[in-house]
Length: 462
Image (cartoon, rainbow, N blue to C red; front, side):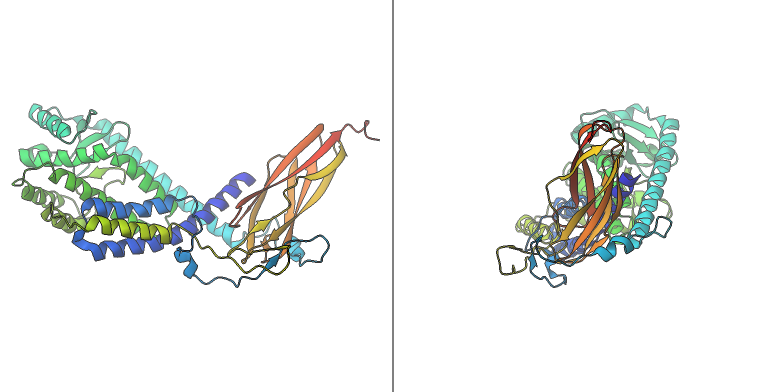
C-alpha cells in the first residue's frame, strides 16, 4: 500500500507541474496559429498542435537558460557549504516529530488534492469504459452493408487513399454521422439511410475522409488523447487543446481528401460537410474514440475556409512554422537553470535553483546482529538547493524494514533525519537492504538509501 500511495503522490506531483507549464505552451500555440492564420497549411497547424501533446507526455524537462521558468520569481539563492562532521549545523529536527501528522490525523493538503485527482481519473476512466462497451454493443448488433454498388465504391476509395487492410462497413442506427471505430480492426460506421441520401460522388468523399483516418491510425491517436485528457482532467486548457487537436486532425484528413479530388469536385466536398452537419442533433456527441466526418458544428467554418484555400502555398510558411516550433520547444520543454555563487573555501558547493537532495552514498553498516534483533538507524539528509525540500514518502523495499519517522520539509542549506527500523528475524548471513526516498528534489526525485548487516544465530554470537 505504501508503494501505491507513493507512486500516486509522485505521479500527481509530475502531473500538475507538467499541466501548468503545458498550459503556457497551449496559449502560445493558439497565439501562433492565430497570428500565422491562413499561411499555415493543415499539416503545419497539426504539427504545432502536436507539440502540446508531446509536452503533456514529457517525463522530465532538461535544464536550460532559455526556459520560460527562468522568468518566475524564486527564493534567494545563497551559497551552501558542504556538510562537515566537525562543525555544528542547523538541523530540522523539530520537523522530525512534529511535521508528520498522526496516523489517525487528517491528510495533508497534497495528499487530499492527490486523492481528488485519483478519484477524478477513476470516474473518467469508468465513463470511458461504459461508453466503449455501449458502442461495442451497437457494433455487435449492427448489420453489414452488402450493397454491391456501395462495396465496389468503398473498395475503390479505400485503394485510392492507400489503405491496404480490409475494413468492414456497418449500418449503425444509433449514430448520425459516418465514423471510423476500432483499434486492431477498424470499421466504417454508417448511419441509417446514408447510402440512399447521398449521391455517389458525396458517398465517395465520405469514404475517402474516413479512410484517411484509417491510414493515419487516428483511432490509436485518439486513445492517447483521451488518456492525456483524463490524466489532466483538472486543467480546462487541456480540454480546449484536446478539442483543437481533434479539429486539426479533421483538417488534415480534409486536406488528404482534397488532394485526391479533381478541381471541379472540391467545391462539392465543402457542401457535403454542410449537408452532414445539419443532420446532427445539437446535443448529440460522438464518443471520443470514434473519428467522424463531422462531429463539431463550431469547427465547420474553419474547415470550409481551409477547403477553399486548398493549394494556396506560402513559401515562407514551413520555415516560419519550424522556427516557431523550435522556439516553443526551447522555452516550454525545459526547466530553469540557475546557480548561486559558491562560498569561499574548498568545501563549498553551488546551490541549484530549487530543492537539491544530498546524503552519504555509502551503505550504512549495522554490524553484527542476533537473529530476531530489532535495531534503529538514522540517515541525515541535506538540502543543498535554494528552495524547500519536500519528502513525500519513504518506502523500504522489504517488509523487514519500516520507516518510523522522517522530516517532511527541509529548508535550504538545512538537514533533516530519516529514522528506519530493521527486524532481523528469519534472516541469516550478510543482508543488504534499500530504502527509497521520494521528494521534489531536482537532482534525484527518488533517492535510494541502503544499509548492510551481518546476521548470526543467537547461540553463535559471543
